[in-house]
Image 1 (cartoon, rainbow, N blue to C red):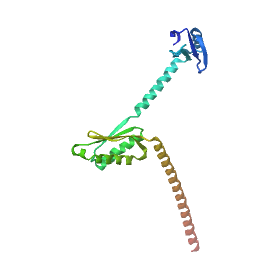
Image 2: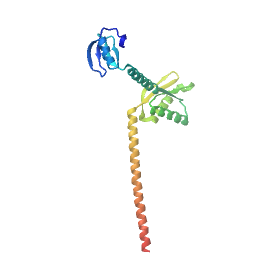
Image 3: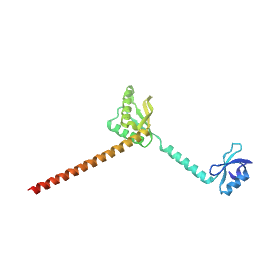
Image 4: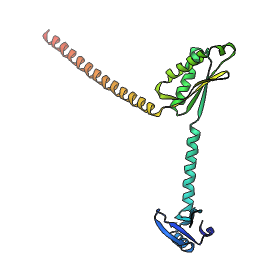
Length: 209
């Protein structure tokens, strides 16, 4: 960068990305300093090397922010594991499955693991039944990444969020809510009209008496 550039000439790119051609390094430096910017090698192995006139401090800051955002996204999405037993009770099943649904809705992958003990190994179909029940409970919000397979004393399956299906479900729920509000408004209006007609009849009866 700047005075540390050892090449005699460089292919120069301006601060807005325009090609300025091949320039001697002293000339390129003068142009950069005239704009109160830096001369930065962006392709040092090219022939001649490619340099760009830029605000190096701002460039480093923006690159740091991009890297930070990328790290945040990679750490936010993780694989959660939820463990079941082949003879799990309904209460425990419902609690664990609610956790699976919550993880999926938060955008995480979920590994469903079934642990077999003793004679349970003779009945792998019990594990398959549990996994099928989990899939049914989760519904279209998730898709199967890794099909159920038996490894040693455990059976596992990995689910990931189906974003398109989740968006469709949200739209359908919003539409249903709008329709419910509209139906409620119609019912309220009809009820008000009915009450008004009843009041008018009562007044007619009083006048007649």
